[in-house]
Length: 315
Length: 253
Image (cartoon, rainbow over all chains, first blue to last red; front, top):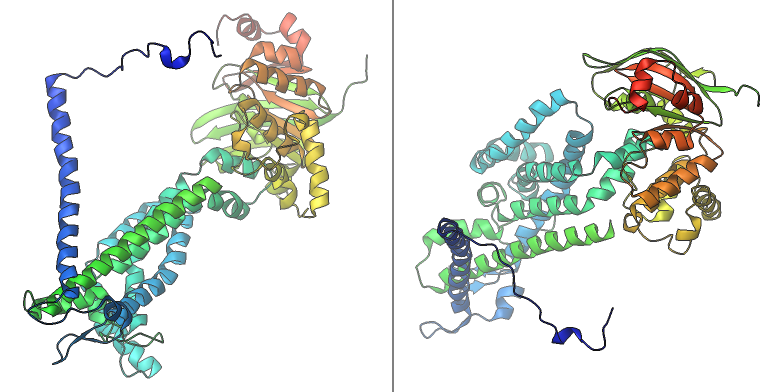
């Protein structure tokens, strides 16, 4: 109700109420604030370092002309050690994206399927051994996976398909998928298990079968969490270094088939950073690749966030 | 007096266990068609367990075991030929808390019909209107059918759940404390609907006044046993068993 004689703005709005804190509580609060700020600070420092070092590639250095943004992003020639070097990142970005997307094509359905099995089909017994097994899969050091890829899968692919080399994006994607599957499965299972039992009961009580209930009630209600799970799995694959370094082949070219060799951003950084002079154009070019990788990862995380929100709103 | 009504549900010597817990002990009961049968008793007495046996919702409980037989319209629902999915289509259920799907009101009502293959929009439109009218909700929601059912009030949500069950035109509707999560006004609406419904209803309730207000017959459960079953008026005014009398007069429970 509005009272004509007392417009709301003219009223005494009272004093703001606050919880009263003891000195110990204030101290604890300060400590946790420091933790929070330090995390933020680390993040900012790394970003500033990364982007300033990367930025120097594009300004003139020691009398040499800086690399143009156009060349960096649009050229596919990555020849950093040639007498007249060229620093085109396109082939490397294509390498990263191709193995990442291919791996998520494998790990997405597999991880979601595993999550569905774990959350609504497996009995207590099979859950009891399957869940630790998946966690174990996630904890295998990636260098071990890369080793298996090199000595077992690569020769197999080479012989079975008559390829010049078994180190290619198919091989790399297989192992990235192995690494991303536990992420997708475990986050996906959390999302599926969050669907209340009461709506599942409602579905059964209306004569739905188990499968109809999963398909029409559980999956739609958890799309938000499932899309987040898949994209975080994608992020996991994008950032992975050692496996792709070992089994992707390492040729800086835009891969056109499953059996082409590729050189993702991460493996380029790992392979070349040790062999470059600090402060050289090559050094800064590697930082620029790092910045690209950072932006791509950030983009995937943002995508996960917004897709999650979008499906939640739709639900 | 009308003729003795026809039995639609018959339970014969039903024993039920959750693991080692003996939840129902030798329960036999005949429930009449087209009547409202209330099941009352203190918490843990087995009334809800018994209700869930009637549409096989206890199948999902790990370690559940059943002895004895239950017949609906003469057919054993736990026999080797019984199909739980078909039984649940014929025996609808409304739960303790409103549990609409996070879909539109329209899609909530259509959930069951679509499962049985009704897909034509004009058929579904007719079904939705009929079900919502039967649940006394049509006038309140007819202009907002595409709105999410989650945005309705608790009482409206519960009547969406009733309408959703009715859309399958069940022979029997089971209601498990359907008003326990509702405010008094919403409760009155649901009770009003139950009294006027032209359907066999079995309702579990904590609330004895509610049983007295809306049911034709009342069954009193205690410690897993069916202590007394009879016309509601008689059970509440002239209980035959001391335990029933103690319970309805508030001496325990």
